[in-house]
Amino acid sequence: MNTKAEQAKGMGPADIGKLALASIVLIAGIVGFYYFSDNPNVPSFARVIGVIAAVAAALAIGAFTVPGRKLRGFIAESQFELRKVVWPSRDETLKTTGIIIVVVIILSLLMGLIDWLLKTVVLDWLLKLGH
Image 1 (cartoon, helix red, strand yellow):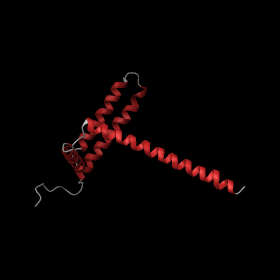
Image 2: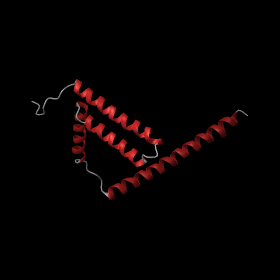
Image 3: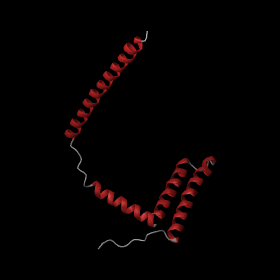
Image 4: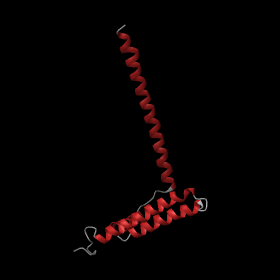
């Protein structure tokens, strides 16, 4: 038996209305930013603060919809999982980086050798056989 509360499957009319309102607030903030761009009485920082406020308000409104709650749950679970990650120590990171650099150099030399051999075989031997 699942201990979590059963969540609604889809969005209802209230959620659609909230998302529409969030979209209108966001669009109004962006339009206001450009509308007041030529007005010398409105400083640039006020326009930027207006857009930031519009984005924050739109996110706050959208957070109380079904998709917003799902996103908040996903972020909370992701943060919980990030606490479980075991990060390598500085010594392990330096050793691993050194190994990768050595392997890249060896593979580069090997690829260069193969390229030189193929060029030599094709250009110097095969193409000169026909002359």
